[in-house]
Length: 85
Image 1 (cartoon, one colour):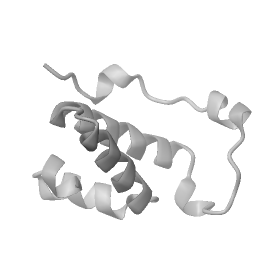
Image 2 (cartoon, rainbow, N blue to C red):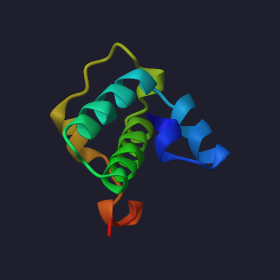
Image 3 (cartoon, one colour):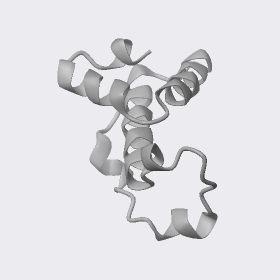
């Protein structure tokens, strides 16, 4: 899935080496099966990667993430990830 969305090697490597790669791939495949555009999938992939990094999911694979913790994180504005035409 990621190799269909990202052509630059650095972007592809970043997606593939980040935490929860299989789960993110499965979610994006489901979104693609629902007919979402390539642009929308790219934005979702970038947002998922940002969330995984902000919540440090690689460092805590078995932890439960609480809603207050999620709300306290300074997630990036979705407009910074690009716009679909």
